[in-house]
Image (cartoon, rainbow, N blue to C red; front, side, top):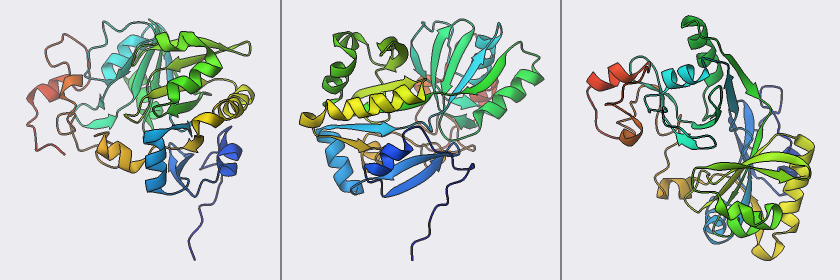
Length: 288
């Protein structure tokens, strides 16, 4: 008999959990204390469909750590060795977060809303607690919280056509790793051209659970001819694409250099980063 995963407050559901179950999710994992579907048809069938059509992913587990206040940029910069001084509003930055020894803590997408408002769209570690500890230890004037945002990813070669049918032609103007606020039924969702696959697509940062479920249903109703299906990050596709998974392929004892993230470490920049001095002197091991 296969063991079951018992759902409790430790394994949080999402606004889309009922839709995911109705679409036939066969397996789940737990990511940031939240359910993340892992397989629908099979690993191989899900892979080929992702590469050929379009999928809608419930990636609500990609939690948003919100940092606000007059020292918010200082705190975010302290957490990463990547220089954020030239960050533009709405720009998405992939950035390693590192401790004082240069060890990896997480590898989120950082989104700048304004000088004093940032989101960290995190991988699977408790970044909020670390950020709160740094804020207290460095006496920074910030507020750190996990906000109620539930991302949906639309991924695959037909993703742009599908999402255009919902949000309109303006969506095509969004550049890679940039975002724009888009109107949806009287509400604004942040939409970014990004996602954890190399098949192309978008991530929609849903801030209203009820409208999010409506959006899920609309994506499916308008994507019938595109062969839209529910999907999830696919192990085959992400390994093939060279996308590392924090906690799986890399961990706390690895540096960004060992993970092939050299381009995201600003060794020559004049920045106040917790890890930058250690990374400038720490010996580099063989890459993963």
